[in-house]
Length: 448
Image 1: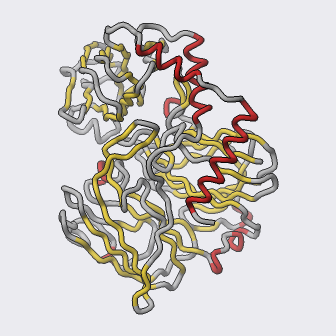
Image 2: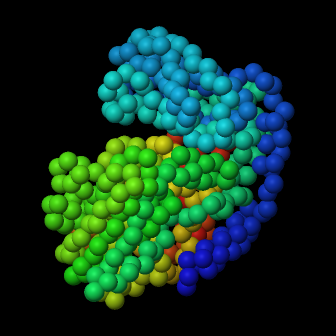
Image 3: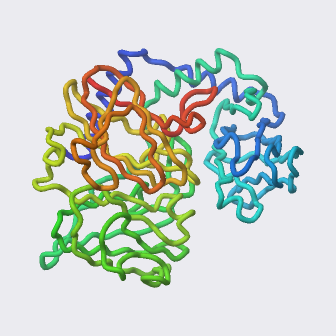
């Protein structure tokens, strides 16, 4: 089945299930109208700073209104709070422990902006967050637990409408999808893959575009699938405004193909290209390709993708001793693109759709900078592979929540035994839900 037809089938299946579960809801329009009629006073948000974190890690704010951040340093060292508006960085003065400051930012266009501490080393230590600006009424939970939004406290009706509207929109359509298969060229028995790194505007949820970096125009980049024993060439073209490089995470490659700047190769300059060439010697499993130059920005903005060493006959069930009906790849991401699954935020995330009785294989990879404990409602799953290594049957284990650290990969198996729509999300709750509903790292397993 083609990827385009598969998406249409998935969307149709999801619509049927969602309509049966909750009915058709248009409350989101009402919530938007209420936000439009709000007073012109700044939308106010409480922010707490500690070593080394910003809370809340994601702030949701409205378009068209100035923003006021009330910042308290609850740590033991001086900190600042800054917002990169895309046209410059606006920051508080240095805030001493136990003291507070305010930061006023002019109205911003819809998009995701980075927040961070400007003191040397603090950003690198983890004092980063996100500011998501969207149309309509929005809110955030402050450090004291109070809820503030445009025009004041969020009402019960606004909360209900926001939650319902998000669920009704799922899975929302956006421009482009990542993880699409990349077909190789065959040259003299070699498999040749072409990847081009560019700077793009990437739509993470309807109407929300972020500054991103993409391979072949998508986040994540396309899937590369090969077999053990293949001789592969991967031609990386750099059409960005800064140098880049490629590292093959978890794969065994010659040292001069390892993609570390000035250690194993020179960076690929803007307008240039580099040919990575190696024999595939690793066993079947999930591996990753990603940038290793200015990687905090470049990987954070989307320069990553899946590299699969396929089992014989492309039969993943042969590795695990079970017939596989559904295979799904899921990248976890955070940082400049927001909290994303395969480059998208709820309600634009892609569901996993299965038929009752199916065995579902999910390939999980975390190319973000934070740990994400992924929790599946209603089910226990079996962890069958870690970092590309198939676990011996005696070492496999059952779970319903799996913490995936940056750089880790897991394969998990789900037996689709219970019909319905089952939420699947990161269980760090500020990554997934606020007063106006679910956002970020949320999708669903739909069993028909």
